[in-house]
Length: 584
Image (tube, rainbow, N blue to C red; front, side, top):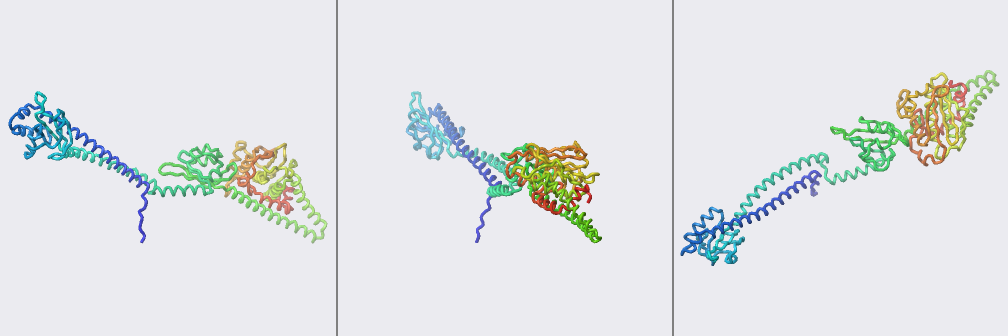
């Protein structure tokens, strides 16, 4: 049979019991102190009262006269009883120097020896003592009766019984206990109200349960890789876990600091300071692409904000790579269709007996494709960037835009230091080209010109288009996440140029936009080629890596694919772009 053990009391219940016991102990201690103090004071008062009565009786002339008679009791007994009644003492005993009683409240005790000490009184002193006599324990005073010659002719003892003193003190203590009980009840009610309020806040949990919850809470915070940030009502950091510190790039003691003072990007700070909830907003930091969700905590009034942070840098990379592969697939499909048309043309020429013209037509097509490939590779020897340009040329051609590598381009292989990886350059150049193609599409002379060269200790990348250009008022806004002059797509816009600026800033470069010579916009990037610009491994896991579309980053794997499609299948679509000005 299982013996049920009582459940531990809740924290509120324990506090209530502790406070009730504390109040009871204080009240009981005060009552005991008061009882002892009052009893001592009552005994002192009784001693003084008995002394005063005894001295008055001893000094009374009638007592002196009665002592000299043959039968003192006849006169002294009525007098003693009257004094007892008038002075509220329990006995007045008058006796001879040998202690034989002349008076006593009990008639049977008259003529018997007094029970108590008389030695000091026989020596002329008045004293008090607590003694148990015929009437029980009493506080008594004993004083001598002296004649004119200071001879002791009698003794007087007056006293008050201890039980009478106790009765007086008991009345006082009873009143005190009544007041104490009222104070205890009032304190208990107040304690109960306070602890009921506390019980609501602790949900009735005891101290052990709260401690266990705290341990789980701390373990969960440190185990979760996603970032968790809690702000109080004044937007100060109340709690941040390890993931939040890593994703936001903050260090040191940040609890208690305002969000505005953490040095975060302005758009991200604005999202954290917003009073309304934010759902799956994408924000950029110096090295990461974050998805931010905020939820206000309210209970009748604003109490704070709970913020969750997810690192989607790798996801953004995969999405960009998928979009890039999709674009390459579409380009290959178009190239296959155009190649089939040209192949049919060659076959038809042969069937018509014009084999010589068929050879000339096929040779011209191969020369045009190889010419573009040779032009790109000669201008940009860096293999990843060359592959990117060939792939982007095919994509631009599908959209009716001619992509041209200018004659100024001159970028040798192995010119880039290890601290400036090719994948970051692909992110920068790929997003700038996509943005330029979007801008140039539909214009009269749809062209995008790319220039890449080194100048002193800097790498210069310049991308210009023949589109409508950038409003000077928007020269800075175009680099902010979420800003776009194009209609919003399913996944939103305004991320591509923000990723470009993120990568450029991380490598301590300069990004600018101006009006191109032939109209449209011209974006110029200057990146230092000095060694040690960025710590090793800084690129991995940030927002600048990954595949690309017009709004995303470019992955190294995606570019490798473009190298194949750009060089191996560049026959028709690419050459058409280079020669026909974008006609498909």
